[in-house]
Amino acid sequence: MSQGRRDALLLRKTMAGIGCDDPLLIEVLSTRTNAELQAAFVEYGKEFPGEDLVERIKSETGGMMKKNYGNWMDCLCEFARDETENVPGPSELASLATRLYDAGAAKTFGCDEDEFLEILCKANAPTIAAIKEVYNAEYG
Image (cartoon, rainbow, N blue to C red):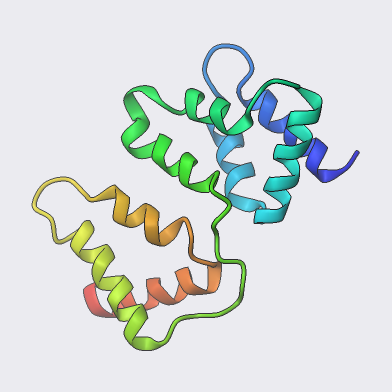
């Protein structure tokens, strides 16, 4: 079985019945490359004609938690994650760390989840590690 078909079936399994197997859904959407996710979505369409996997995920992750969890899952379904090993320069990393600080710890109440989603859902792993290092150095 191809990885795309396996992932398509795993995604279907995460949303079978009442509720959703959130940890498995998060694992698949967070750990696959853009190409692997696209292959899974194509295979899902072949396996379950007439069903749109993106719409199914949006329907399963909506509701009361849409503002946080659902938007995160929607962002991952855009296949827009940077898959290069490139890391921005020091000034851009400092800017990203500041944006995260301003969106979270600097706020008296709540958090600007959209800023976190925009930065962290699309950044590659080396960039996230570099942002974390700059953030910790600047904000503790």
